[in-house]
Length: 578
Image 1 (cartoon, helix red, strand yellow):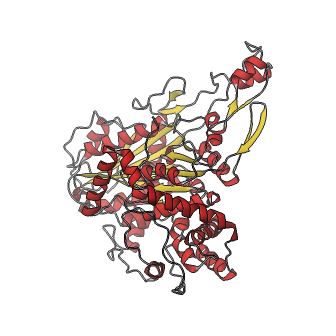
Image 2: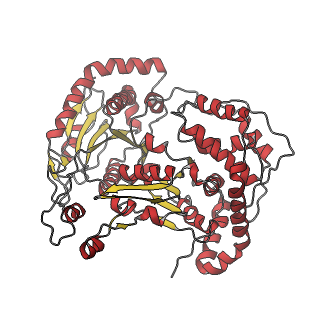
Image 3: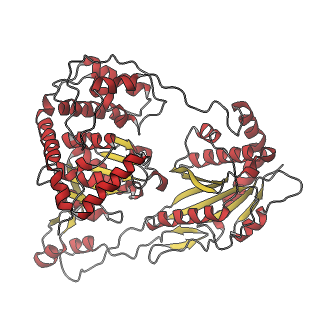
């Protein structure tokens, strides 16, 4: 039984996501769509519903996280090799996705080499296979959809830039929207066939408008003035390279074709700006002025929602984007104080603390970690680090058969190369409870976080920051290379409430276990920064990897339990000097 997809046109809200998908359907050369958002924001629903608004023969192919390179690009047909002693290519998922959609859920957890292959093929439209003694190529033109939850970690910057368009979703809904969504889902679950039939007209209209836009896409022109506007906007956003300029022109042309315009207009430029720049911008959003277009231009897009809501005209949309925005940034300097005290605090702490701290952290590399156990055949634990074995015991059957001309059993077995290297993730667990506000403890903690972030950034490793305070645990910074603007980011963190130490440790352990499922060589360095003001016992909540507790309590008589907590976690203890 073929599963029913929830109709694309029936999804409530998420207009930017719908727009990005429609533009990619009109011109797959845009380079795919990356959708970032929390659970429950209709990422998968819209992605799967997209196939129903494409051509009848369009395939929807899902790439599992555990996929191998052979599964993705294709490989030798073993049966042909054994029976006929001939080299024959067996297509992979890239072949099956041709003229359709290739969907990767949690793309940020996909192995980087697979993401590279995906994006290269998506850009060229051809899958080149040079492996196992064969050379093969085939058409692979598809729409790449990647969804991710930023709480699970970020994509590498160079991979992020390779996605044509990017959308950041939110699941913050009004009461009426929540009720309507539940009613829609209930109707679909009770009778999928009847529900889908009720949206047949909207789906057909949308499919027809996409086909018409594809037919005229190559005839859309863009003036030199508007090309200059794109270049200015990209320059102001301080994007890297020229990919943004190229994608922007393609997306604006697709938008113009969808609206039925023969030329790209300023409306089209503005409408796709955030889709192109959201994941590429290296500067604050600029305020380059655009002259609103004349009112006689077509402003109503083809429908893709139901019931038909009153849409703002294109002029209103444009003007709303050009209106100056009020600065809602907190005027106060935050708990850390103004910039000068921050720099002074770091200057006071760093010279005497950081060398000792980093020396102590470096020693954790030779400390065994009972929380980090190797899986069978995937390496061994050496000093708390899961290190791949030098020699792989996995047979490279393809190489073995090719070298033996299909003879069975092969004359000589060849083995796959062992995987080397490891990914180090630095987990900072920052105590944001009210007790840390005494005697500048919180500002000193932030200074240490910033110094650690700079070290991580120089080492080209990854950083994730969790905060625990006010009886809540939150992921303050998702997994990424330490940002360059970490000082400004730290200023916005506030402290309040109690210290949910056990809840924090449980959340971090769950997070580390999820990451470890998809990584053979993963090593965690944990920094618990706290004043130790917690009565909770944590001996059953040990973190993966190595842990060091940094005690920020600034008092002659210690009331916190920093050293005791460190012992319970089998970690090292470091007292921040007064």
